[in-house]
Length: 330
Image 1 (cartoon, helix red, strand yellow):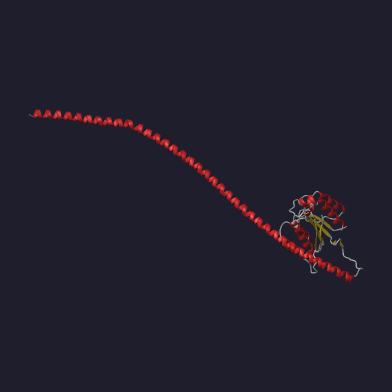
Image 2 (cartoon, helix red, strand yellow):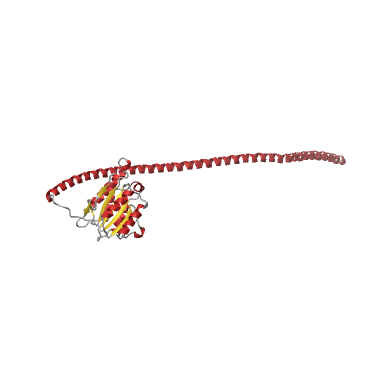
């Protein structure tokens, strides 16, 4: 009985092991199949992802390039806009300045013309009264030639060397310098400067040229080809001459030759010269200022404002500083 039972158990165990073995083998087979297919799937997936990443990177670079281009264009547009605004502001400022200069020049010209008319009327009345009081036999005894006082011991020429003077008036400039020298047969010192304060002879900068016939000839010869820079305004030269050569023990005459005054205020120049060339207790000034106006701009037609301003300025300076102003005709 016991032998039969042991035998039944052995058969059952063998069948069970077969079933288990088959199942285990099937599982192993499935695992092998899955493991073989998995690298191919992963590889394909990796290839697909790599392509997608490359496309996305290319699109990113493209977008970055477009962004940089747009940024540069935006910055350039902003710079152009800022520059345009600055130019507009500068042009508005220039326009405002020019309008102010024109208005100031017109007011000064109108005032000067009114003063001139009054002075002419007063001078005419005074001359008639003087002739009546002094009689027909009266003769002047002061040192004046052609209405220009020639009592000075030192003379300084302040000459506008701008292009307009060089091209349109230089022969007459040489002629007038020669004529002025002729009315001073002998002086203690001569100096020649341009309207910027530059010296004709640099070796005589800041000191007097002794008056001799040879040096007068040298002055005229050198002056014929003299072309230093000029801003066509007599102010710098006049101020430099007075500041450097003014002396209480010297009688000096300045002769200003020019055709144009384009910068600054007439009254400001008059005030500056007044402070430099103060009158003494008798109302006399040590530096006389004479001026000669050349009609260069008038020869081109019309009424040049800057030429009129030059005439107004020099008339005022000559009047205030015991001098004379001569305006040449065409």
